[in-house]
Image (cartoon, rainbow, N blue to C red; front, side, top):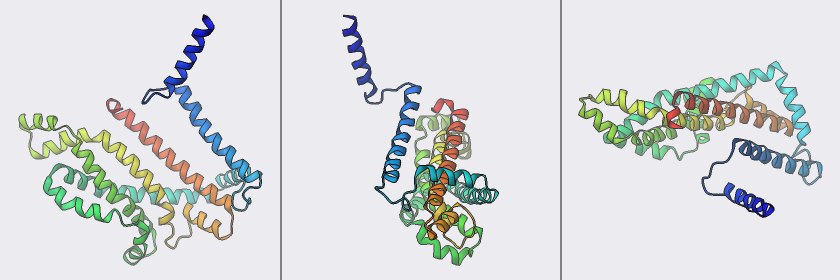
Length: 273
């Protein structure tokens, strides 16, 4: 009887893990996340060491690891990282500075929606890389050109997402404030913006992720520094280990930024979690 009960409990436990939207323990979550990375590593190793793909096209994990540690112990590589971080955050902050007010305007007033959203919807389908020739004409080939490419990649999406977040603010909350005599500016500043902040933090987290994806595109514009430049230079010499390292470093930097935003969201807006 005891063995039968244990078997039933085990089967029930296995089924419960796959129930829709059912939470799982932190330890199981971490274990499964690590297992997913291990699966990728095993498949990569099999393809490379097993000779299924030539190592010049898919270097072994150990070679990429060696190249990674060689790069991160180099002061010059850290300079490239610093320059890329500056470009990403420059484009991202510029997009926030202009895009957040426009998004709130479009989400708060119908006249603002009519003025802002149609052109945002139209332009956001244009690939950022297509703007490179125009940006070079407008801003030359200096740092502003790279920042503007990242800005273009983030700005139009940001405006639309902030507008959607603004419309999610409870109408009951707005009506209550109006009943208490709040002015239009007080509604925006003290009600709408305050209620918007948790959603806005999540939106900014997503947009910053997109900013990192546009880095290599931005660093196609007449560069001699940055992680994108390092990747393109390695491509010319078929140094695939260096290419992998550049991609991994960009991914790690993006992940660090994402985790910082996630922590800040939980720290400042715990009720929204």
